[in-house]
Length: 578
Length: 61
Image (cartoon, rainbow over all chains, first blue to last red; front, side, top):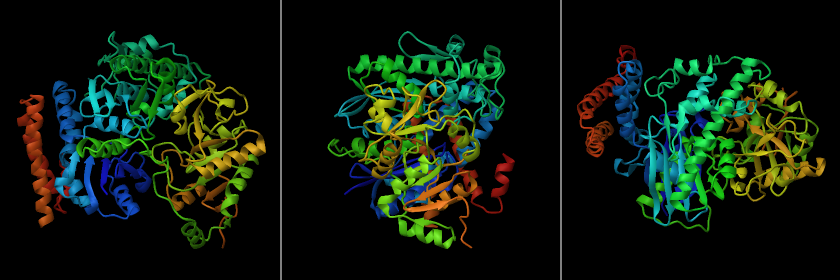
């Protein structure tokens, strides 16, 4: 019996993951407890919950591993700031204070805040953590492994071979040449928040044509050997904390979009932004495919495990499958920095403790790895809060919810343990009928209060996806965790079909989520299509809900019609009893 | 008191890591700057632990 805890944080997306004999038993992002989106603190609450869930104390944990090496990051920061002095002076002053008062002392903070013996604290490498999170969580004995993100300590892109002997580093691209940071610079240029709005660039890209590819390639320059360079005259992320692009980028592409301004793709200006987003997306995909070709040639393997924030780009994932050399692709649900916590724990278990892999039992038991609340607790809460509710027999929940959806209601759906990763996969979801064309605007405007151009995903019963979507071979696992975009081959689902005729698909297996599968099956019986619109249960700018209290608070602030909390059904109108 | 001493000793361990990092990267020119900054960091974190001084630390810098 051996417990290993992996931690990430102090930049963004802090998280804790607990392994028991090499299997994940609990995994949660700190934001689900703190309600601070992309929480950048130490994952104290997530850690406490992981230990409580397993019924252990910190004394039972063999190793606690931090997902990166802070001092090497500090070294990179200093080298970069010195090289760019004096224009980096402002970033140096502010960044250094943060380092000197917090980030340098991660080990002391873990010891003090979490009660860990100093000798038990280990540090993995940032990209090694990402690579471990992809490879050791995968069901493959051998695979090529690619990690791509903004930057870790120094590496921004790393190539590995994963096999029985562990992870072997084959090559890496170092800061400041970074696909992730260039994508983020364009995210800022297009008026979105860095480290949060990258999804919006992906969504905006569907409205445009990639007519600025040549210009974007002046920024992210492909090399003949498959790698890439960044022309640093267009970006400023290596010396500025406030701005990630320079005036020269605006001279190249025109004025940047003002943050928070409206986006209308039918106007010339809106079309230009969409075209730039499409061009950035295309150049990113081309760069990834070029690197994948190199990795395939180096390893000769037909499976690719992908990790790092860029692996959450579901459009690029499709490009890797359809245009790249690999037969199949694996991405674990929290491919970004939160997943580094999982990788740090898995790296410790396999490469520090020397435990061999056993592929007979999945490392990840399913997407629901977070906290759950039982029906008795939920019932007591609703009674205490005097919220009118109906208690359903457990076997009628799916039938009743399906009827609500088909009748045009929008549901909040809180069932079982909350998901690991940024996607709602039928545990903390907003659900609706995808056949209704008005549903997209209704949910964006009146329920989630977010940009109208942003798309929603369809969930579909496993086995039925081929009727509606063109899923490329080798993308099955990605579709299970909503990490793949697929062309839609029907006109039946206008609310979940994006402007370019694609959808970010979620295929639901009965074994992974029996209740949600039953709901989809019932919707299929009523409508002929086992498909629902599925989006995360949160409002704009907030983390996805985790607890019933959070769900109720979000429900009453939104335009949702009905809330399903376990077997309890709450209606929006007349909900207060007294 | 024992907890504070342990935390302080763990923080001092940063100097060992700093040495190993410099040996690995051969960026010896960074060492003086990093030692000064790490020492400053120790002072800052120490001052932050004093309740009536901590509000001024961020403002001063």
